[in-house]
Image (cartoon, rainbow, N blue to C red):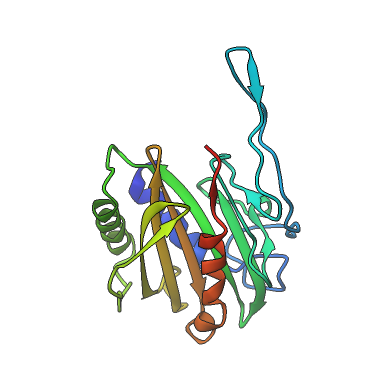
Length: 209
């Protein structure tokens, strides 16, 4: 799937309430969420040696098996319940309030040979603006690290479903030719209530390969 389509799909997901959290205004069909558990990837074989990549205790592993991180306090692991045009690597959802479930999701896309995080962040932000021209009030780009990898973050107001104003915070990090975009979405009135949950996700992040 082209990069722009992935970004747009992520925005659509971010605009959607998560079923199983009490919402009656779900835009994507989902079922009830599962609880947070640690998991293991299938064994991999190198020569004659067989190893198993294990997610650290208290974390959940991404769909591609490349990272693991925590489900924040007050959230549930909802990745297996959502149906979307792209494969969601991680999805944590809070109970719905006002017809919307605050959520944190992670999507992945090929880096296209880009390795500099500032270039990647610039391209990703430009992609957001193309996919969603109503997005506005972009903050300055912030620097952070995600398990040792340089990352960049930004927040802005958006209208992904064209009628519901959201406050979104995104973190861009790349490793081994893949860009991971962490997106936190909340109603503006609830944004500050769970912003610390994103730090739980980035601080609890472990690369598995």
